Length: 232
Image 1 (tube, rainbow, N blue to C red):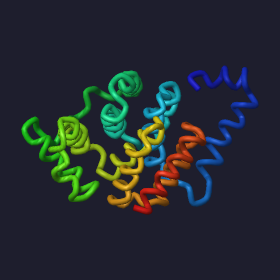
Image 2 (cartoon, rainbow, N blue to C red):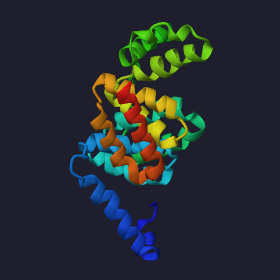
Image 3 (tube, rainbow, N blue to C red):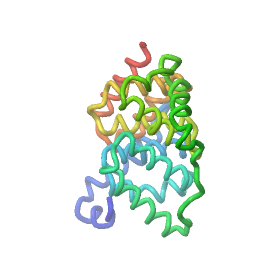
Image 4 (cartoon, rainbow, N blue to C red):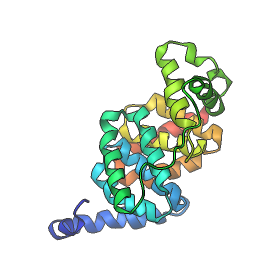
């Protein structure tokens, strides 16, 4: 996808079908559509999750043209670190900076942090409660990993500006669905999405719009996880 002209020359039949499916059939499927900002945000998060760096670079300008703001892109990339690790995310951050700079965006962007080193644990735990319920209020006390989860993942990232909690839970769902092998966490975050108002039908639409980028097995697994979350 980094050199579409070449691919259309070397693989014309494949590219014809790929483009029709991803850009026409999926996008226009009745009752599976999303607004353009949400659709592009979900796809960018999905590409992070499946390590689709070349396709991410190709689609990022389109996402920006569709109304995804530079801050929204940066916040998506930042949050991905907690679910994918910096080893997988750093190339995406560098690519994002190249694209934004080429479009005349001045870096760094305005700061979005709302917590301090002193209150990040408290604020992160509060975000967990808002998403998952009162049972998470003391979860951070169950070992150092859970404390890090509250302070770092939720306190450092979920509390930032640029994206609201519903958008942050949606992109987390995409990170998990795209990387595969995280079905317990995917079920939990599907439920967290539902708690915030991202209902079952919405999540199915998200999976549908991202299917061309992660394939059928992981998409079907994600649909099954949504169903299990809806039963709980």
